[in-house]
Image 1 (cartoon, rainbow, N blue to C red):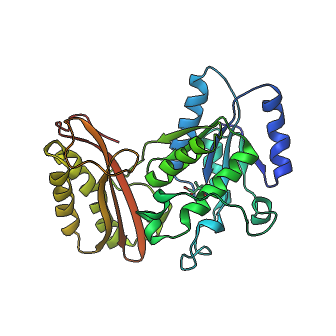
Image 2: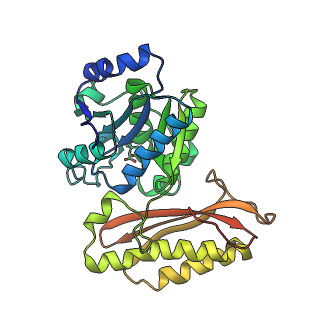
Length: 300
Ligand code: PAF
């Protein structure tokens, strides 16, 4: 049985809890979340722990739980976002988290709406950024703030939100934030559906339809040996077979979300990403693919 994580709600409480680790030079791990924790988040915690253990060190692992208003658009329902702190604490206890930082909005934004924010650059305007203007500015700003408050050595994000992960890596690089960013593999239901806090909005029929996204990605992965176009065609076949799935985009990019050149040598790594609405719920998913080589053993 794991020890109960300590709950910090203010910046001062957090600083006091982290002080011994800082004084002892122990590495600090951070898993930023918006709560509503599920098995996918649990896997992020494990990835953080493993990274710290691999360095042969022990140090506190912090999970932050904060529904960040700045990353919600005016038509996205911030109030509808699930807030389940008690259940989240149980997940954290089971996973051996040391500190849960669950601040209020005024703790994270003490000066009100921030005047200085992190601009994501061109990658913030495509894919998710196209339908959700301002979203990545909100994400990067809050992640930078959390990094400032926790000052982690290692931070873990899910590959499920691949564009977010890519932008956070880029921010850490461009702003020399001195934190190692780990991208943890997507956790899936047995039928392939990627775990997401949004899956709870799907009714039984929509839940069946939603599996078309991961089915499409698998089909693309298997066909990728024949090239990017064939992979996309295979994915579209699966998506078209699910009439309740309204596709926003299906793309193949390089691993950094850049454009692939028209002809690539066999063995070129790429990423295929999909976004679709199922009912009123917007779902995203992605998977790594290797172009021009048989698909044996490729998985995410
Ligand atoms: O992925 C999320 O849950 C959020 O976008 C994050 C990274 C915690 C920032 O609010």
